[in-house]
Amino acid sequence: MENGARLAALEALQRCRRDGAWSAQAMDAAIRKHGLDRRDAALATRLCLAVLQNEDYLDWHIDRLCSSAPEKGLRDLLRLGACQLLLTDRIPQHAAVGETVALCRASGYARAAGFCNAVLRRLAESRDALPEIPGEGTAEYLHTRYSHPLWLAERLIAQEGYGRAEAFFRANNVAPPLCLQVNTRKICVSDYCLALERAEIPFEKEEALPGCLTLSGGSVTALPGYEEGLFYVQDRAARAAVEIAAPEKGMRVLDACAAPGGKSFAASIRMEDEGSILACDLQEKKLRRVREGADRLGLRCIETRAADGRVYDPTLESAFDIVLCDAPCSGLGVIRKRPEIRKKSDAEIAALPAIQAAILDNVSRYVKPGGMLLYSTCTVLDAENTAQARAFLSRHADFAAEDFALGSIRSKEGCYTFWPQIDATDGFFVCKMRKI
Image (cartoon, rainbow, N blue to C red; front, top):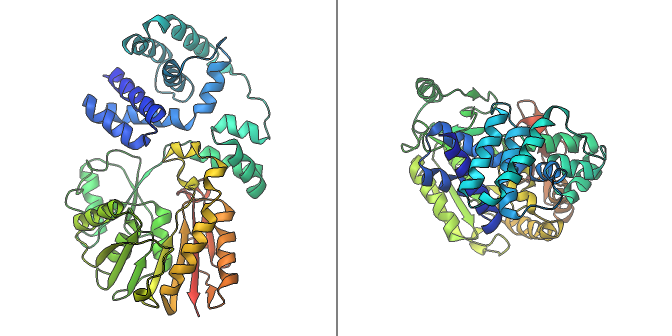
């Protein structure tokens, strides 16, 4: 029942707006509440994500048809209807309008049903000849057209140029794929691929990353072998970071900012679960997820410890062959998966470079002579990435950048930034540094 999917999407959108809930959690709760089947759950998720990814764009078109600003609850409904009209080509116009108006009546806005119907009908009539958003070529245009913060549009235009900034924003508004990493401690890659084929689930292989499979989406827990621990979820860029670090059997590895655990899992599998991995994070509740994931995957060489990466621990001095430092960051590289990140202000992330520098300075002391420090973030801002790495190297003469190659990827001065529009990954930064 498609309107059940629309109702679930609406409730998730309302929770995100009212309570600041994470979109994925709000959507999962709504799907469970309404008992949606796989088809309707996919539709609900697609609509909710598309609205959150395009709020400013949808509002621009809604507001041009309204004489006064709709109240917040009604705006949620109008956004949902406008999304179906402007951002999908599988839903007939009459269904998009009619079902949204029906939902309006059923959601306590019966008095506004006529207004909702009029706005959506006018939008449907103009769908094939929409007015141009003014200011093309400016940060304001990118902000409205792609629903990204104005400050971020200004920053990326200055950093990357207008064309690359627009391509990045456009890529962020496409539904992200689901990336699986096969747990080769339990099953070989070919056998797991056969299990997906039997379940009629299409996938693609990533040749440069053995065991990395890309799916179009869907429920993770419903995939073959979830309970048995045959795979875990991790973006290709994050998995690539572990391949660049190249941990080997018997090594000691520190995952300094480990939660939710993907890099620890990848390192353990690559090390054939022989050696030791200390997975640290500031909050114990986050480390519980790491332990649960390791238990599901059957990985035994991972130990967890609650620790602040900025606070020195003398027992860890020069103790590790590899230190993975995926530092707290603005998260702007994963906007396509977490659209609520678009709400962050420039001021909110201003303090992050100082925190990253403090963590880097501290955990670098835990690297053995000849060992390796891998700094990474899931953002695309130079201040948190290349500038941070260069500043660290200027402070620490005992470390040197080390170039690397992985598939078609080639680093420059030990650094590489993954971009969704170029690498089909999250936005992600890696810098490889060797202790001399």
